Image 1 (cartoon, rainbow, N blue to C red):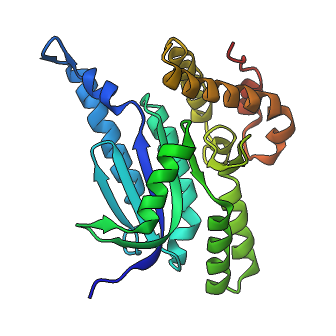
Image 2 (image 1 turned 135 degrees about the vertical axis):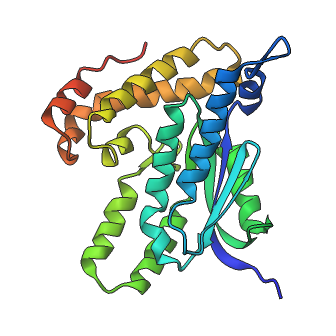
Length: 260
């Protein structure tokens, strides 16, 4: 008999997907480079969120959306969940793709064939009505629930501390008081080699390119990214000592120019 399970669920949506699709065709002629790039991006999504087989995680991808969920007491998923989302957002930005999403908790049925339930409805509505910008948001109660579940699964204080620091290194609080996966400052927690410089160069270039749009619904998204990028540079002198980065990389990051 099929029953609801208590599951953590991520609903993720690729922004501007229709426009990306339109760019794969020019005057009824296929643009192979754009097709390859889109195909590679979709493979990136699937590969990143499908890691760690053997847990309760289930992944469903359809067109421009993806749903990832796992049981609330699946401690194997706790540690890597937020870092895998952050890693995915970073990899997609490198391919000129941005996402918006929400993480929810509640009743859900999620198999390889079917996904439905109140938790998915909540994640979808939160993504479409509250995320607003290119960010993945979540309620603080989800962190509290995961922390409670992880505490129940281990008595090791070091592991508990590692869990808390690992989760919070990927998160930030936005100006509207919503928690979100931070692919600006948070990137410093998962990239520790020269590619961190390349990432911020590409991110800056991507945001500048997006400023050419005049449509208000698009303009506001790139405006949010610009503000976050500039705030990262403002905060960098005070946060750089918190991250295990080579002095040379820190120096170069500190010399990045703000976006006007």
